[in-house]
Amino acid sequence: MPRSLQGRLLLLVLGLVMGVWVATAVMTWLDVRHELDELLDGHLAQGAALLVAQQMRENSEEGTDIEAPTLHRYAPKVAFQVFHEGHLTLRSANAPLLPMVDVHKRFRSGFRTTLIDGVRWRVFATYGGERDVLVYVGERVDSRSSILWAVLRSTLWPMLVALPLLALAVWWAVRRGVTPLRQLGRMLTQREPQALDPITLGGAPSEMAPMLDALNGLFRRIGELMASERRFTADAAHELRTPIAAIRAQAQVALAETDDARRGHALRATVAGCDRAAHLVEQLLTLSRLEGGAELESRALELGALVRGVVADAAPAAIRKRQNIKVDAAQTCQVRGDPAMFAVLVRNLVDNAIRYSPQGADVRVELARPPGHVRLLVEDSGPGMTEEEMARCGERFFRVLGSGESGSGLGWSIVRRIASVQQATVAVSRSRRLGGLAVTVDWAA
Image 1: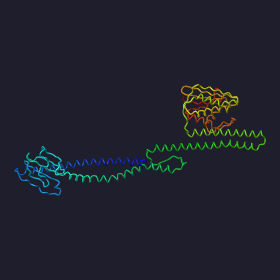
Image 2 (image 1 turned 180 degrees about the horizontal axis):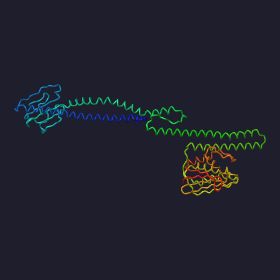
Image 3 (image 1 turned 90 degrees about the vertical axis):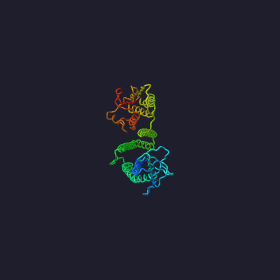
Image 4 (image 1 turned 180 degrees about the vertical axis):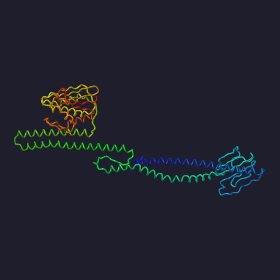
């Protein structure tokens, strides 16, 4: 089949038209042949009846063999014989002396096809007025074929003329029918790459409506994605400018300072600025990977062991702030997902709880398995958040002011994005037990 819709339509329609045309021609052939046979057979029977009537009017005495004259230019194609008591009494000029039908066979009135001197004849045989009179009337079969072809030529030539006209009409109809598709193709070809406005196509057929809706929906989603990426790029550039400027300033101070203690302090500040910049870049890469639709691993994993490992890695930071961190993880809490993404989610929640809680605060990490799902709870005794701040959790680069801690403002965006990809729900509230912030993450078991 052709690859183009127009070619397929043309092939199918023309094939159907050709099939109908051939079937019509065959039916016409058969019908004309049948009617012609009936007509010519009736002609033979009529000729025989005339001879019988003539013979009945004549004297019944035995006469001599009479040869009928040739009165028409087509007469050689028609022959007749009359036998009385087995003797030939009348015949046409081209009729043989012997009966046209084998006399040794049992005589029966009616039509039959026989071979006379190598030529096929259609013969009608019947009795005369008495049983001792036999009449034969015959016609050459090839004359019938000539008449048949003449009739067919007059019948088929209009169809032969109509076929190319019909094909041209079908081509025009199909071409006109797919005009909206060509218009859509030209519109898409001429559009600028940044043009994401909806496509409007006047006079489009109803079959094209789902395709146009899908295209416009795709353009809308691409526009939203590009707008989000532009905001992300602008925010990332703004956020990276601050640590880079601080690193540059501290490096300039270290270069200009002659006091070893002050130079060391500036270099340590430079290293800290590099760490903050590296952390920001790592968070940006993680968020970009999540929003870019990268394929993630999906397998069964033991969430309890993963949580205990993440808390163990974060324990030194809690110890430096003399915080009490407690882990209560069930022995078997299996979920399905990407282990690396789960580790990033838990690490961000635990890191936030430690980072934004004061010296000597309590941090509790609890992993439970209520019926049908697995729940992770991370809570602390820190200052928590207001309702307005909780509502903004997940916005890129949003940070609570006055916390005294540095950060990229991307941790919550990463947490919510991972939870969405891994079919989990995140809820933020105030901890009833410790009084600070409580974050609950639920997965299907």
